[in-house]
Amino acid sequence: MSYELFLGDYAYSSWSLRGWLLFEKFGIDCRTRMLDFSSGASVAEQLAGLAPARTVPALRTPEGVVVSDSLAIAEELASRHPEAGHWPANPGARAVARSLAAEMHSGFAPLREHCPMNLRSAYTGFSPGEDVIADVQRLETIWRHARVVAQSATPWLCGNYCAADVFFAPVAARIAGYGLPVSDGAKAYVAAHLADPAFRRWRAMGLVHGADLPW
Image 1: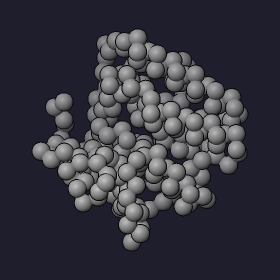
Image 2 (image 1 turned 90 degrees about the vertical axis):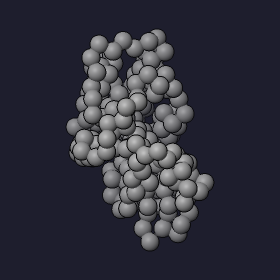
Image 3 (image 1 turned 180 degrees about the vertical axis):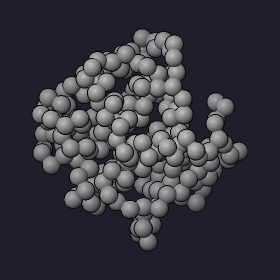
Image 4 (image 1 turned 60 degrees about the horizontal axis):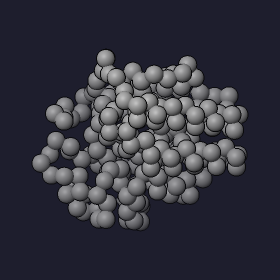
């Protein structure tokens, strides 16, 4: 039995993008199961056979254990596949990467609320509020800090692409899609995500799969 990864809509589900990248970018095979966001059934109802999961992404391991949180999926895969490189090998860079992923996982509520991910559209004339601007400024701070501590000479935050970059991939889509004001350094990081082959593949699937959601 292989991994089974349950995902939401390609175009709209930022957490599903993260779950998929944790496999795709690190060379781990899985079977994907797509939920239908336009269905009359809720996500929790569609995951009824995968208790206790009620959100996407959700993972069923080869032995049948359910992992129902994206950060838990990252850590579980890193433990099972240490050679894959989900976290940096350098202890200092690894500590920073884990801190970044955890902050993204639990924070940035205004950015999530006012700039939901939509890989089918880009918006002009969007005026972010002070709370969104504060979130963007925080992103700038922690991204700069990560690059300094990890001495990253790559487009990514902590050297090689790692799980921290996975967690910020949908943020890059939000910054680009809403035209949020960021520094040249942050623009380069956003551009690296948008040019990444895995991200481009996911977005391409989002352009052709599923209906436009009215909300």
